[in-house]
Image (tube, rainbow, N blue to C red; front, side, top):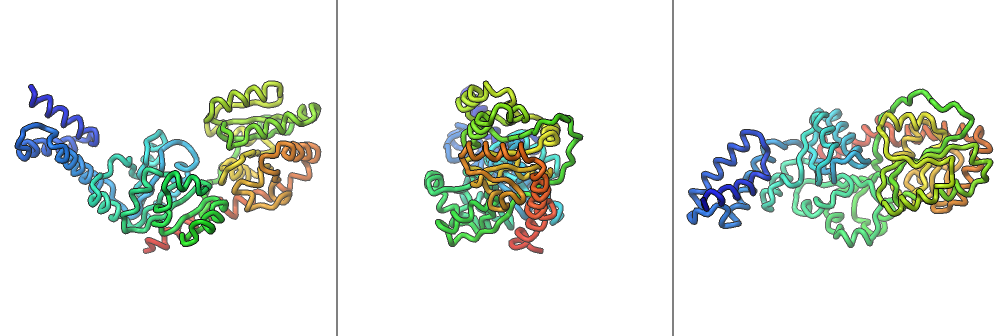
Amino acid sequence: MKDFIQKLGFLLNVSSNLSTEKKYLKTLRNIVKESSKLNKTGEYGLPLFYSSELMNLILKERVQEKYQGKILLVSHEFSRTGAPMACLMLAKTIKKIFGEPPVVMGCSDGPFRQDFEDAGIKTFLIGELPFFKNDLKNFLDSFDLIIVNSVSFLFFDVINNVSVPVVWWNHEVLDMKSVKILNMDKFLLSLKEVWFVSPLLEDFLKEHFPQVQRRFFPYGIPIEQLPERQIKSSELNFLLVGSIEKRKGIHIFIDAISALPEKMREKCSFKIIGKVMEQGYYKKMLDRASGIKELDILPPVSHDELLQYYADCDVVVSSSIVDPFPIVITEGFMHSKLCLFPDAIGQALLVEDKKNAVLFKTGDAIDLKNKIEDIVLNFEKYQNIAKEGRKIYEDYFSMEKFSENVKNNVDFFVGK
């Protein structure tokens, strides 16, 4: 009985790292048989090092057999959020240009993983990597290029030992406090390049890590056709899409709306759509908005529903305090909507105020209120600004421009 229980415990411990495919179960059976010969004590799972060694061998076999390719992409997670979506777009584009899909590793699982698999792109999780240093290094070195996407912190320490080029496609804005907390100094210095989505990051890199090679590499968004507009009223419709958290500056937008003359508010409709990230903050925003009948705060909606909201709106708004490159503004440019946003977000460095967008002082609700007021009173003069904003999409975010950037950037390391 004792022998059976020990054997079962060993099986459970090791099999947690295995696929359910029959051939891997067969591998497990063979390894357990072999362990009974080598482990003279007859106590399965002892010594501990030997159990670890067996699991490492299983993982090594799996990754070497199943996950082969020239390029490895690393995603911090497989959620349906901005950075993983950009990672999927990059993977699809690499597959289209180079005729071979990359392999994608996630630091945590999620529903969006299936979208990669449906696109013919193999995925696995960081827990499936062999954990012995030499075996891990050999697996990672089997690729020609590793692209780390966004904040994949679990992978940062791993790449310090690899020999192949590693680049970081960064979607965030850094500061020295976060760099020190996350011990990112070694990671940054071990990179071949940083591909930065937001130009806000370039000044930081120039100041603190001037030796790191860098290049501007914004994400791409495929063109989508909007459905027919359903709202035909004379109201001017303002739309803010973004997570409900302080850094998104939802309170600034609400305060600006509240400061508008009541008769002017009656000429408008305001909608905020987003996932609640900070519950306490969300409750405060509901209280703050409770007396504004023209304002609705809505939960996340499906993609098709969101396209309808874009079709019905006249002005796309961001009120973020800190935001590298909010996708809602890029989508606003794509749909030729008037875009109103603070002067501290990434897109502010690509536009000219009152030429292809409207800027307000970051964090200043009164300045935002004044800009809204002028738009409501003189919307006709803003029509051409909205049309000019479409050129920002074409120059920086179109799939044609994105494909060109992907080819040039990847060719630099793995050109045929």
